Length: 118
Image (tube, rainbow, N blue to C red; front, side, top):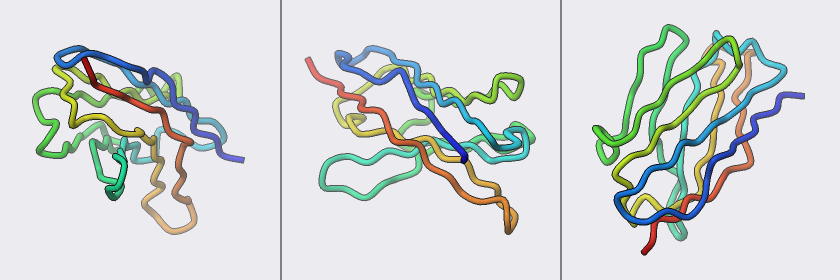
């Protein structure tokens, strides 16, 4: 069974930084598009950032210049470095593995809470 396990969430003051990690198992990690999404209370889940198998990245406008997504295929892990955090970044952050092609599946982690507050 595919597992995506997120870690690194927590409480941070505005302007602070956090690094999220997502460790994947039972998938051929290197061929999956890996992404981070977030869902704030009362809002729909939204894309934060993705990294494709070739290493290209994509970011939501709201996090460009502040967040960086990266992947380590040797460790089956994707990271999200979050800097200059704002209260509006408060949300549950979810890791996603998208096989893109039919039959490879699309998987979600359980989520990790990020709270930005003074």
